[in-house]
Image (tube, rainbow over all chains, first blue to last red; front, side, top):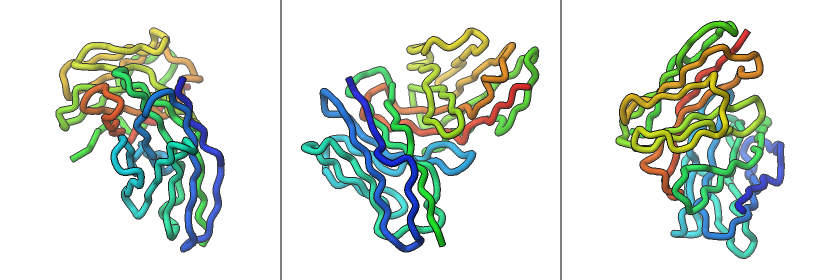
Length: 114
Length: 114
């Protein structure tokens, strides 16, 4: 069975400081992993995806994530937070099946303080 | 272009009304999805279409009726909804149903049922 756990429901950082959003997954097979961001009253925007190529994945807006199989983690980082980064972030597992079903984490709310 | 469009942006309806939500993509994707998202929760899958055929119905009440008239369009027909159906309805599309394919989300329709 596949599952995904976002370890923090809420993260607060100051503008200009690093961001770390943590995600652990459980999968019997090698899944594809995604991070999406959702700003208030908006749809989900893809930040980055991992599909068994390079373990360090670079995304949009300065975000990156590292796939660590031994730790079953896919944490999202950014060196310097910007006010516009304040949003809800979802870690998503996509099993290697042909159903199109995604497994969403519960989300992490990122607050950025001036 | 990775744009999925949805209309309307907002919809208020009574419990006896009939309305429709519309979703469109021009990326040549052959899989399309409807999700329901409640506040502070991840999206929940409702329906999956693949090559214009219904692939998955996640036990959604019959007051929600999906339709895929062609490969670019996806509709969700609403009838006799309940107040608890108030939510953000998201449409998404992907190249195919493969787990490695990215799902691209629209901005959503905010539905309020009175």
